[in-house]
Length: 337
Image (cartoon, rainbow, N blue to C red; front, side):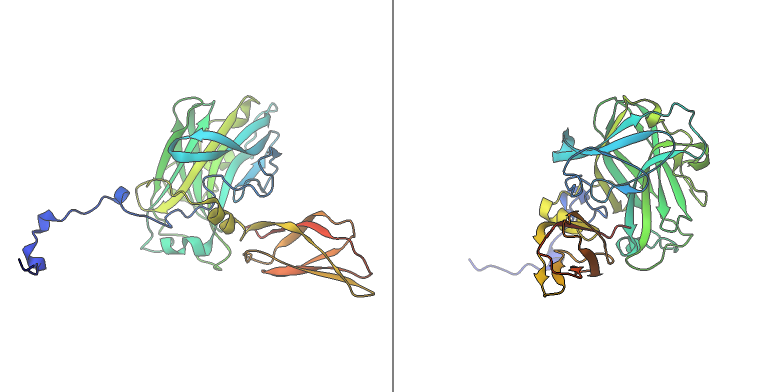
């Protein structure tokens, strides 16, 4: 029997099923790098003290001001939905001198402007965004945070609740696009920040649910994480995406995440040997990923006392004004925001 051609006008429109969002193949939704906490180039899973403005796990920055202290560590954990790691924040020194109005303790994620420009913040076309993550703590109650413009001029405060102690819960916060403020800039400069508060003084807390110009990193209802050295806070599955719905977390393979992280920080896990040019010694090195900007250099071992020159975003050289055959071990470059 001959096959006949079926025209589109022969198919009833009600017979066509539109797949749900969760059934589609969605890629490159998550604007956060290393949200699953799988990459830790700096510390390889060791707990580290977290002074002000310090990166710990890749892309995870900590801010603090006050008498308390805490550590951050990549840990293996049983988290729902296939995660293998989380970031553990542990209070190591409680605030016993009275929590001050100017004290703050928080986690921060910094975006390049080129990552968030499609959200069109600062225009009438600003898009809604949704932040989601898994969190666990011995504390229950209200926690908070803020979405902030790169220049710090605009803040949207949000809240979420930890309902059950020592249990991973997924949280989802939808934020309206900001049609005001300055959200433009150099493509590789800081364009946006996510703040996740751990404890806040009165000068930095605000009211949840609106955009404003006050320097608010969270809400007035924020739980005080630094009240006791028994307090711990775990987070994983950080996802930030366009739209009003938290879609399933976008897992990616370790190699892909590592490559993205190396734009901002790279451990060049090798030895750089110099060449002896009779009166000077010179050695070249090349990054495996081009950096955001020319990086700041450090090394694990430099027994020859070489000077370090980043030169450009793709590599650099070591130099000493005398003949020297010592080598550099583990070059590190940081180009963080």
